[in-house]
Image (cartoon, rainbow, N blue to C red; front, side):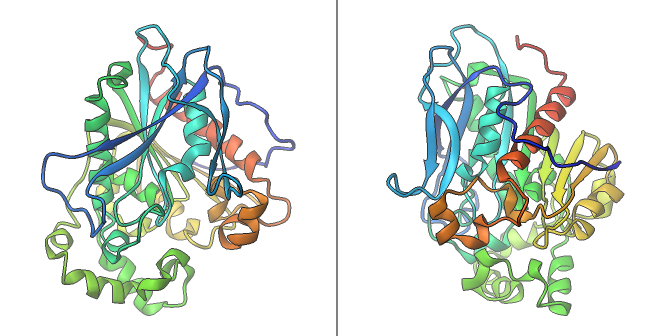
Length: 363
């Protein structure tokens, strides 16, 4: 079902579901099994976690960038706050950032989820995150991102401090841009890489074929040729299923490369899916992504935010310094209030996960 929502008239100070203080912490997981690290320097999974904190927590503003000149606002939370003293268990939402982004770029969503009673954990995808040098493999081997999230679920459930507070029957996933593709892989979507390469060969000037983060690696075809030499084994299993049956619902924000996910595999997905995209998105336009998913996936609801809501509107809100230094990622069209869009989409995600996971007050 395709819906169009009017933008909120005024900025929402709090979400309707808001009730908890928010804690913030990190974890680094070292998977025991051999896996594809996509040429990353660090052979580990770095994660950021937002969670409901004890009522005594004192939140402070979080930022991305130099302390004296931050580039992005990253919500309000208390680092290393105590969890609630009770033995309550909370639903877990795993988060996947966009290509070349980072876990912290989903702070606006992670914070809102934690305030509403979820534990949210985001991973820096190896070779494809802004905290370390990019690699061609990080951009090309998209399907490997799903294995990151599966490993993160394993790691956080085994964590002695946070794991006991997770309700293992209520696990879901959310992602932005190619992170939206990633969480759909967890739902059972399979990939046909030739769709993107054929499209970009025929339409090399299309925005989707020259994403700003990939500028140092050439065209998608050139990157693919580079990666063939190092990652033949991964390329050979690109069409495999990376479904994780523990994931019970998926929320995809401005999903990218969706047409590479085969119609047959999308037809077989049975868990609830919700997709939201901006009408002015040229990086992952709805026609080739969200609309395609809606046409081929059962139990999927699509929302198109009207007006000039674009792709990077779903990144964290930028400071004045960010707008000056990173105009591509920070400058929205006139009339678009990023905080307002974030509040609206976070509310949609909370409502969706609450309904899909049949969420009560915890156990």
